[in-house]
Length: 46
Image 1 (cartoon, rainbow, N blue to C red):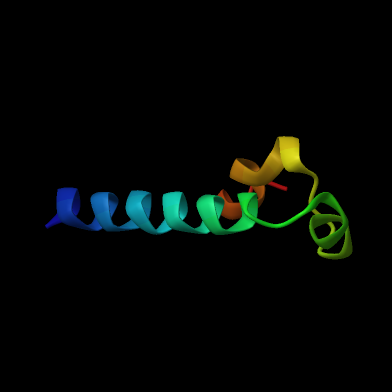
Image 2: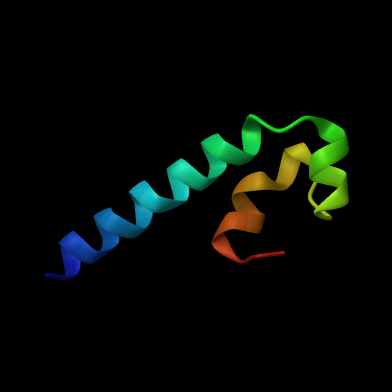
C-alpha cells in the first residue's frame, strides 16, 4: 500500500502543478507563488 499512497500523492501533485501552471503570472503573484517555484509550493517546501 505504501507504493499506492506515494503514486497517489505524486499524481495529485502533478495535477496541482498543471492547474497552477495554467494561471497567469499576476494570479500566481496574488497567491504568493512565482512560476519558478510551483513544485516547491505544491510539495510544501516554500
